[in-house]
Image (spheres, helix red, strand yellow):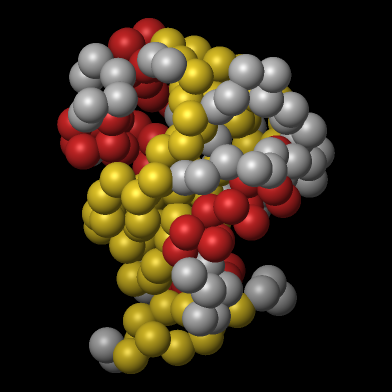
Length: 176
């Protein structure tokens, strides 16, 4: 059994086991963060032990907020839990909804608050090996091209963000 997360059951937000949420494809809140250094995004490759999309490249971090947790607080919590990053001020850029097959009979159906944070010089990154296999910085234009050329290397949500929501995520921050 995994931790319960908020999910919509018959239109009502209800705590449901996280794995069950994904088995049933229930609509649920989520948070995703992109840490940027100018036009470069910090990516993580998901740990090989993750129950879905292991070893795939994703945005800086993502998660499900705890019951009653503010999405902005959740974004900062997850930056620290996954990557040891503290002291950033993620800016809310959009709220989107998507549904995607994540393999092994699991489905993400998320209502995602998307955040972007600017990395200061000398940003300290200390990945949690239970969450993150490795990290890398990559230019946004190169990332978009790579997700189109080799989609199997990237999580479905990252591909969706870049293909359908790039403007709302990065407009005014980097060339889109």
